[in-house]
Length: 349
Image 1 (cartoon, helix red, strand yellow):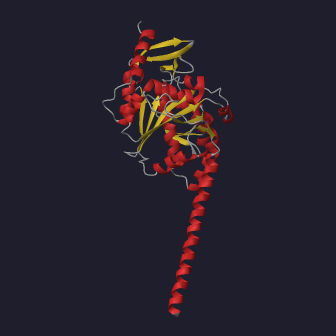
Image 2 (image 1 turned 180 degrees about the horizontal axis):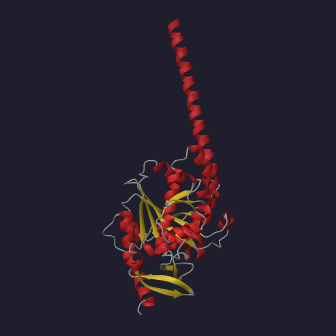
Image 3 (image 1 turned 90 degrees about the horizontal axis):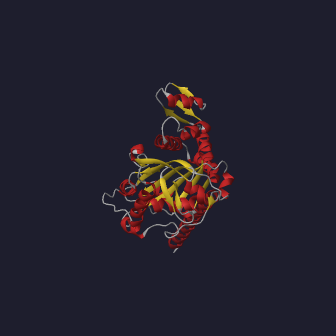
C-alpha cells in the first residue's frame, strides 16, 4: 500500500512538473509572439489587395496555378522622410523589384525592372507613362496594378522602403565594402566620401545611397546592378549579426517600411525562409538584353527618356521563364493588345 501511495505521489509530482514546463513554454511562445507583433506593428500598413483589386488576370492565374510561388513587389521610393509614407503624395519608385519565393525549389529570385520602360498605367490614371511613375501617380497600389497589367504578374503583396531606409540600414551594419577597379566609377565613389584600401571601398550609409543612385557614367541597367550589389552586401553583414543585434536593427528599420502584409504572413514567410537556400539568390533583369531591348527613346507628356521596348510579349515570357521556369508561357490577351496599342501609338520612325 505504501509503495502504491509513493508511486501515485511521484506521478502527481511528475504531472505537476510537466504542467509547469508546458505553461512556461506556452508563456514564452505567446510572449515571443506578442513581442514580435509589437515590433511588426511599427510598420506603416495599407489595405490588402484581392486579385480583382490588383488587376490579376484569370489567364495568368490559370497558367501559374501549379506553382507554389509567391511574388512580392518591392518599391524603393524617393520619399525623403518616414512620415511621408502617410501621405498619398508618393514619390517615384526609383527601384522596382519582384521578390519571388519559390516554396517548391526553396529558392529566392529577385527580378529588377527597368524604371524608364514605357508602360500603360491602368485605372485610375489610364494613360501611358514610364514605369516608375505609377508609384507617383497612385502609390504602391497603382504600382502593383501596373506591374500585373503590363507584365502578366499575380502580385497582391508589396513592401515599400524610402531610400532613407537604405542609408540608415547601411549605418546600422557599420557600412559595406565593395570592390572596384580603377576608373571613373571608383573616382565617383571616392567623390561620394568613401574610404579606400586598395580596390576595396568602404561605404557608409550616405555613400552607399549615392552609389545606388549613380547613373550618369553608364545607364539604368548598371544602376540596377549596383542596387542589387548593395542589397547583397547588407544581407552579408546581417548574416553575421547575433539575434539580439538583429532584433535591434529590425526595431530601428520597421518605421521606414510600408506594407500590406499582415503580421502572420510576415512571420510565416520568415519561418519558411529558414529552409530556403539563402546563399544562392537568383538575380534577373527585365529586359535581359539591357539597352539592346529598346526600340526607341521617346518623350511623352513632357517626360524623357522613356524606353519603348521592342517586344512586350517577350518581356512577359522572359519574366515567366525567370520566375516560373516556364518555357511555354503564352502572354495574356491584355499583353497582346498592349503590344498592338503601343506600336500603333508610338511605333514607326
